[in-house]
Length: 469
Image (cartoon, rainbow, N blue to C red; front, side, top):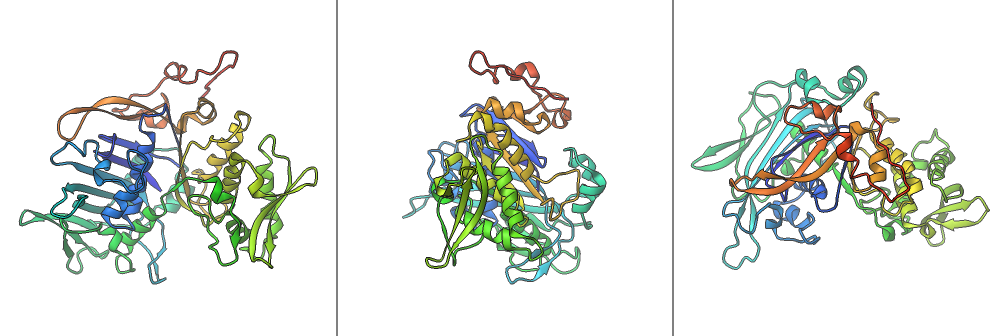
């Protein structure tokens, strides 16, 4: 669970600090930079798996490319002589993970702060694209006694917080950076604290982060941090992928674009020998029926042994049977989220842009309820019936804003901020609703109901309201 994100110098995120709860909705007009928050999270997730260059090229470029120049990541990357990216992520990591060899591993403590600083080395010689350089990396524990003031979102201390915050750590960080001979050297410290010598590595020529290189249970807390960041996914459900049938040999987990939806539902329905698969199908059917205009009586995965294909099949109230590929784009996206809701193996952070796309205004309530239900309930302990999932969405829809609990809202606009090189620039600003838990910070400038009303303006004759306690 990502509880806090700090970013400086990434795209239009300048000195940006965001506290997250189980569910967060970032609302604002197009062009403010809402998607850059998702890009920053996605970038950190990629860095836990890939090289610096590969991660930089996969993050959405300023023109929408997927293989962009690393300078696209910097707020002024094409003009600054010494650009810098700084990240900090406070997170709750899993209490048990598996290493790359299938061995179980338990972190020393589950509440961590990860910091990362990157620079840019211009292209040299035959190189056409410059590279990112690792300047600083650290991973340290957060004292569990500080949790009440660090986890500020509403939650049950006894059932939720105490069930996910475990362990103890004192002394050195798990990863630290020191300057030796005018060059940064990153050191891995053993979980045992003072026992054993740290393992140093030169940072400047490092092709990847230190976290991404930890694959075994020898460093269980670093491994847990890596697994947590790997679980941060950005859903970009594509109708063509959602409409695709699965072969028997295909994976049984849905991709970020929605591929392998039939196989995922098939696995979830048959994963528990004590549960009737029809119960799972009935739950998905019932949720899908919340959409006005979708008259579905039943839903199941059809097994075609001749062609070895799995296909989601729907039966309408009229008795007509249709494959899922016949559904509209919005309904397909809704169906995919219904399946994720029933899959207890899907944990971690889910980022989703504009979930209202393709959804009729009459169905916005059903969509908001669904994405909120995907997130863990912080009033109860996480478990099979309450998967430890976190959800962040962004939207420019006034209808979504009216339906989301104001406690979970952040409003996006731009403001003039001082940049790392001392100049000023238009940067993303995120503001909470007045009277909510985020507004208690002294440096926050909350949004009032009167501030929001112009944003909620809809065509004449339609009444708008925003009620909150």
